[in-house]
Image 1 (cartoon, rainbow over the protein chains, first blue to last red):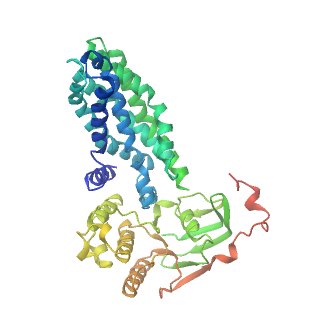
Image 2: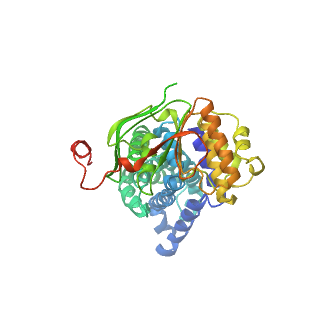
Image 3: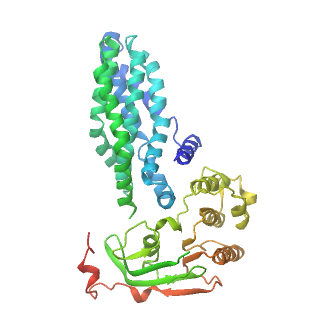
Length: 218
Length: 208
């Protein structure tokens, strides 16, 4: 599993791997918002947590169709399925690699981009925390969607349609943590619910992904 | 070590039954060559033997954990070097040293070359070198000699012979005579002809 993770990370940072693409997309979306809404802080700061979360969510989506599709095309998925490693482990390693190349950099960059949107001060660390806790769920759900659509040509759009509704709980709790953090309110409840969603995803989705892959390999 | 056995096997691709009534045994140390025209189901049969898809009916022994499958697509990443690709698969299968596999297919000089810059034949050799690293007794090879030159075909035949000599099994779907002593299974005889099949293939769980 660690090997698959290491290989995927290495592939991501090699030429054409797409590392940084999500981050650049996130940056551009966030920069575009003041152009559309107007530059006044009074208008921007209330919507900043929500905008940043939606931006992060869409940026996560961007690289999902590559999770299994490339391995499927070059036959590596067949070979991984026959290798002495459970498909559940492959699924978890793939999700972890996706998170390390998208979710983690997004989480770390978000507090800095939040400055552009005038997020009030105490919100920055909480935004980072909410993304760190929430984005693993996005990667896991997305990996599940990628497993479901791996056999399809042009599966990327279908993948987005499948995955986005499943992102709703994470988005609600994640944006709520960031908002409450910015307003200095108590955020224990949404943060623990966000953590619960992620923990549930870690526990269940690798199995669902592996089942989907087995069907799609036929 | 036991051999590879198929009992009353029927395989389907995309829900369409291709081959039925296949039974064969391959003893340790021997090879089986599958022949038949394009589309008859050689790849489908190999995938079924490899455990990548369930048979329509019948059974295959042993299961997938004794089997190494070498497909058309070799699973090698273009942006990784030859050595990195092989080292990944070696570690996945718990094998340590890739030097012997590199040597067997004359890849030592290319070890630091990115796989995307290899020629088709070199790339094929890389895919075949992976088989050596799996350490598994049963090799299933789908058109292994495509784009190999004469010299490489001979080297490949040597590798297969060495594998068989060590008690291994090889099942090859190939149109090229490798000069390996092998049973030949002509798949035409087991083809499912539309409309002419009765009985067990469609009776049971044939249509999903």
